[in-house]
Image 1 (cartoon, rainbow, N blue to C red):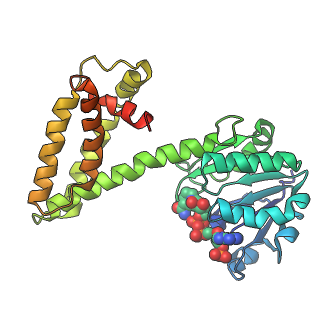
Image 2 (image 1 turned 30 degrees about the vertical axis):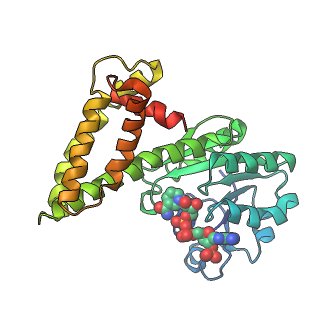
Image 3 (image 1 turned 120 degrees about the vertical axis):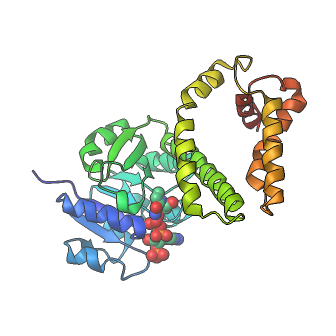
Length: 288
Ligand code: FVH
């Protein structure tokens, strides 16, 4: 069976791997990159080189962008809006939900079918079972492209709101970045006493893995909005965080990540909720 033709715009670290997996799966692939020369290996593997964005876009029914940011997507696509009409645009660039919605609206006005995508994987994971990609926008486009998307990893459809995939992406990354910051803070504390970060990593991974098992209980409290049940109170947590901050200072390490959490806890205590469950920091975050 003939596989659908794909134009891939953006041959950075991620774009090149996405193109490789499409070629491996037998798709005709046309590639374009702003800076010439990044397509050599792909062309050797069978990709067609496009000298211009227009040449790339008009060579395929599905156009995939994997560029630096929303501004670079607009800069690249706006001049070829008319050429994109009647085609499917899949933007895998990391953008905010509203930026994805803007692109979805722009595409709709121009008769372009649009899906926003979010890559929950590093380039080396693309094509492996652990790679996960999220999509939102046109349900019809997702249905028709599902097999194609699965050459990159598992494909999840998050609904018709063009911003949904991006919202999940960035919400998940928020947890990841704060976890790594907490790990770096703990590592700075113990390495200041001569312990290696490697030794600390084993212990940290064990504790943090166990803690993720608590997420469903925390989620239930948040969804029900009742913080009066059992659990660590805000007052108790404030004392614990204060002790960590002082230990950090004793070791000559910045208490920055702990101060961030402490500020949320203290604000809720100030608001009169000191005896309630510490999951209440969620309310402080929602208050904006
Ligand atoms: N790499 C990763 O681990 C992450 C995993 C999660 C998702 N991200 C997102 O994927 C997008 C691309 O990331 P990347 O790693 O491929 O990024 P770079 O290697 O820096 O390549 C960037 C490409 O964008 C091109 N580009 C930049 N500015 C423009 C512009 N104004 N007009 C046209 N193209 C532009 C750049 O071209 P060049 O510098 O070679 O000319 C690269 O092709 C990104 O959203 C990640 O957040 C990857």
